[in-house]
Image (cartoon, rainbow, N blue to C red):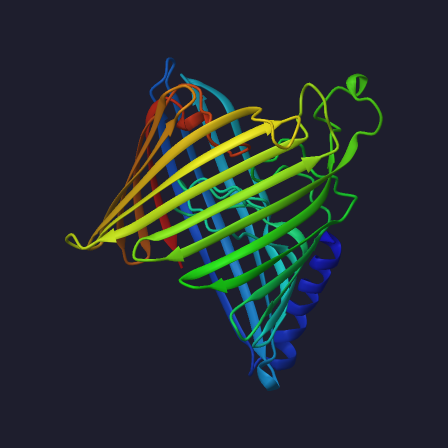
Amino acid sequence: MRNLSFNISLLFFLLMPRLHAQESIIKFKGQIDAYTGLNFTNPLQTQIGARFLPTLSIGKTFKNNLKFDSEISFDSYLNYHFTGWTNDLSGSKIKPYRLWVRLSAERFELRAGLQKINFGSAVMLRPLMWFDHIDPRDPLQLTDGVYGLLGRYYFQNNANAWLWVLWGNDKTRGWETVPTSRKVPELGGRMQFPVPKGEVALSFHHRTADLTGVLNPAIIHGSATYPEDKIGLDGKWDIGPGLWAEYSLTHSTLDTVYFQPWTKLFTLGIDYTFALGNGLYIASEYFRYSSAGEIFDRGLYRTFSSLTVNYPMGINKIGAIIYYNWNDKTWYRFINLQRQSDNWTYYLFLFWNPEKFAIYNNTSGNDMFSGKGIQLMAVFNF
């Protein structure tokens, strides 16, 4: 899948400008950001980094509104981490960020390659975070994509159907703790329906997980791979305030002391923009994560509540995200100050969290956001 999508994209980028340059749309844009952060632990932790994310887009519209377009972008970054005066973790990398081609019309689209696939109604704590690592604290909303083929069809009544086949992905995503076998295709789909004041959806995904590299082969009885199925339900409604609910149920055939066969995630949320000044936006969610040996067992669980507040002030904006862990009675606090100036955006982050970070699974940067600290970021978009 990776080689196929790369070859298709490369052929498209080489041929389209030459054959139809006068009718094609070619865009080049990008993003450059630099950041530094301090974590006031003992000893002091310091992080310095930069990222360059260029994007090339090419598109052409044919008769009957048939459109063929493609996007290629790379994520290149450099990061240094110091504990005290010791550079204990540094790295640099250039990797594909998006690499896809798409054929679309008024009621359908078919997209192949390295792409972002995400859906659901939740905002901060998302049970349906099946294929991404989007962190609500990240103002850039960056996330790795997945290699696959995605088709979507839009009905006249605003219902829509999704089908996807993924292949060649071998990393954990979202709330997963075991990677996917890159040699076995993943299959799934989603149906979304309009309802009075909102919409509801049903999603399904099947994958083969691979314990190789996770557990010692000596304690794995039988095959290191096993099937896993996910079912998701979500809905959102606008009844004055916005309301949403999201649920994900995962079942695997693996049942060991290390992993439970049933995983359940649930979020219930509400938001509203108050007519105060420039508009005060407030959103809150209740989230529960549990794993158990039987589907109706309570099992091991974690429960969080969250609150998001945003207030625009002209070219400036102030926001905050607060989490509360009901299990160990701890608070997580993030304050975000933002300033916009032409193509530049500046951010100041303040955080005050427990020493052991326990919200997100498999999300990079958690260690720097534990304890108390500050981070500065400058972003240039062109």
